[in-house]
Length: 224
Ligand code: ADP
Ligand code: MG
Image (cartoon, rainbow, N blue to C red; front, side, top):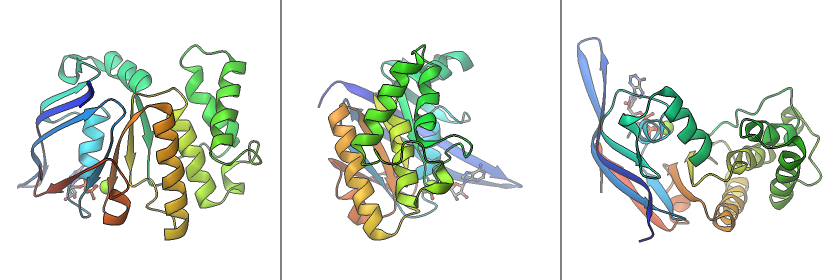
């Protein structure tokens, strides 16, 4: 395998609800190599989102080790985690979470401005990504003026804008009809490969998972 971009060891996460403790992750070990695209497959409720939130350094409260680009999450303060998210990670969700008052290009420009890029560099990058995703004719449309598939493509472009080493995608086509999902997923995978990023893609769909380089299955809190 390539040098790892992500190394997860013994990851555990449980939730306390009243007097019940649910152990969702019971010791996850997972290594993702640079440029590797991995499907995280499991039924609804199996802990996929919980795992991605931990790896995305969005949620604390876990035991075990998460190393991203050689940095141990537990040793980072809030600022350090923000820098890892900004410099190493990109996020795609089931629902696009685009900013409704900004057009497609602006939604892809914004995350770049927190990385001291000039407006014109950020614009060029946004237009290149959107065009590569077939949205060259939708650059100044707002999210509400775009179809579901187009909105999700903008979200993909936004996730890749800062050239993340690792893209975390949580059911990225889960809100699309099957035909659109297949097209958007193929474009997402092509772009991630072209960019040389790695990706960890959560899905409950076997057919979608089969399109990745490798499939890991989440079952009863462990990876099979
Ligand atoms: P998946 O993404 O695979 O559908 P999740 O990671 O969303 O699964 O959830 C896994 C389990 O953890 C579910 O039983 C869910 O109810 C529980 N869970 C997730 N987040 C929380 C939370 N913040 N508080 C309590 N329980 C949670
Ligand atoms: Mg989920």
